[in-house]
Each structure stands twice: as C-alpha cells, then as structure tokens.
Length: 169
Image 1 (spheres, rainbow, N blue to C red):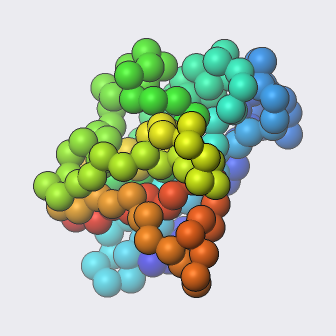
Image 2 (image 1 turned 30 degrees about the vertical axis):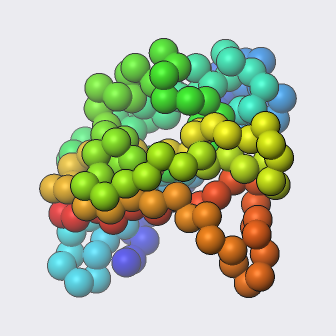
C-alpha cells in the first residue's frame, strides 16, 4: 500500500484545531488516509478514531462529525474503512446514521465471532463489544476475528482485544 494523502481532525466544535469536544473527558481525533494498492492501483480511504469514554454528547456528535467528514472527503466514492474504539455497543442510537452508509464487518463477515472486544486487562466486568471495523465499497468481507490469543507470552497487550477483518475489492 502507498499513502497518497492523510489528515487528522478533532472531534469537537472546532475540528480543525486541537480541542476538547462537547462533554468529552479527553481530546479525541479521527485520522484518515487515502491509500493506493501497489498491486492493482485501486484506492480506498481508511479512517481510525477513538470516541470519548465518558461523554455521551461527545460520542454522538463525534460520530456525526465523522460521518459528515467521510462524505466530504470522498467525492470519488472510493471504498472506505472506519475502525476504532467507539466506546458504545451496537444497539446505541448514535450508530443509526453510520449504519445507513457503512457495513459492520463483524455482522457481515462470512466467518465471524461474537467475542467481547473490551477486556479491561482481565476484569470480570469487562464484557462489551465496543471496537468496530466498518466498511463500504468492498465486494465482500469473508473473515472477521477478535484476536484473543496471547502475544509474546502476554495474556493482555491492551485493555481491548485487537479486531481484524479481510475485505475484498
């Protein structure tokens, strides 16, 4: 893959400068890149984010801002991937606009799992699915996985398990 261009915006009322948004506990961003396959020359956008863990307004408005920016940054309608820690479960109404324009890889994959993504470093109370891979413009998603196996003899490498999806275009 070759990165053609990239950028970052803040999830706030002033997205073009570092800032704290709405009722957020932390400054949050979305970082994007336009990528080009060296193999076949096809382009796609990749966006990654981490929504606030405290503020519901920050999650709602931050995700709305991401949806708006996705539409603006992609006038050529290239395939798009959006990943991140959304700090909310899929049943939340904040996802409704995103669900209209993108697919959830976990739900669409031919082979998938339903393992929690938040592990809280092994806490008994950590059971939620709050990390996602969303996509559009790809032909299929044959495989999705929450990676729970130890890494370098460490049971937990983060308070979240990594997630992985194979997207075909």
